[in-house]
Length: 482
Image (cartoon, rainbow, N blue to C red; front, side, top):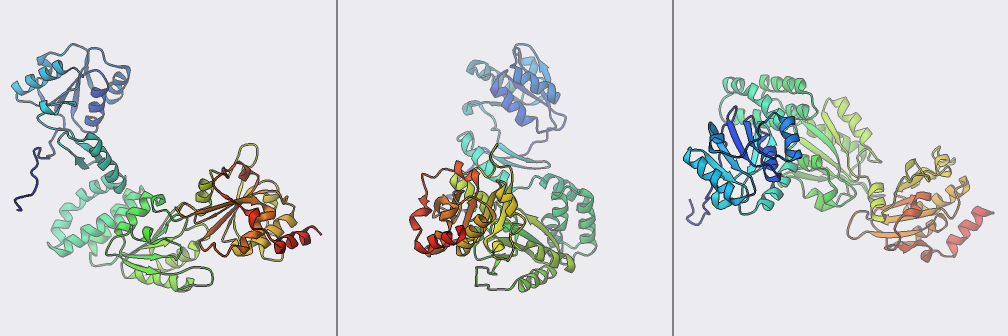
């Protein structure tokens, strides 16, 4: 062991407290905080509080703790395994600690580290799994910050999965040799089909999957997650998406997914770029489908990372059909779609009471056909229209909507690179929209939002579209009004 390794002054342990008495002395916020923490255990709480606050009384009644409505006396500590001094009064707290030590009971005084025999940790509770974070009383706020990060990493179902694992431990030790076979079983148990079933709330399916795994431990169980990467900002990724990226063997990602998001995956995961930008597809959709199936059959854990939300213009339907036909298990993890990110960038209400209560998501190319799509009627009646991938057909979009009856002065908001620091925002009217086609400096994904609700957006940080109108644009609208 290196000589310069820091030494812990408080060694962490997990103490058995089932059906044991723990005493809390105090009647205010400090006592309530300790009661809430200890209430996550199976100990019997005894709270000494002569004038308990209404909040503390309510908690005691709801959680079945014993309430002693008397001034503290040493006898109140009899039979306890731990004592907490949480009165907020230094003299009383010191007396509780001294009495506890005289009785051979370890004591903790809230916010008085010099009086403490032990420190209470910040706790991440996934019973029977627990993660405790301590700072030896030096930095409670730091401990809470660390707890928050760990809490986000661990799925809520982890406790149920751990409880299921207990029921398989004896069988696994009896049927599987020590070493790699047993480790492989437990890894697949905690990260594979049993874990996914429990995460979905189906304990019976988790038990069945674990039984199948135990009967055939050499079988590879592949799984594919179709994950929404969001509009680009890595901190808009969902917690579930981040967990799956950290567990992935292979990450397949689209061209619009930023490197910063891909980099959130497991460091040694294989990363495969699969396209797709307009006019430049590194792989066809059929090739992507085949690759997902092949990786699943190899027993790989795959994340198919898609820009925005996989179910919004992400061709997830074709990939799900291919996986279903091949018998490969899969799941879909939603992401923040670009329309929501663009609206947030503009502080724009997509629905607005008394103005609009419906929305349309479409692509600019949806308006290139010979007839107007059915949703055009919704746009005329006041729906907010979010147009994806519409820069190169902006004039056609505007012309067709005006032709359908949408007023040329309908408000429009445009965002390039929604959610990112380098985003650009433009505002104007439907009559101004064709100017987008002249903006060859816009190389990132562009989202356009059209409708009366757009008028409620914040425009002081955006450029006017009208500044880029030219004679060619004007002629378009002269023709549409002829």
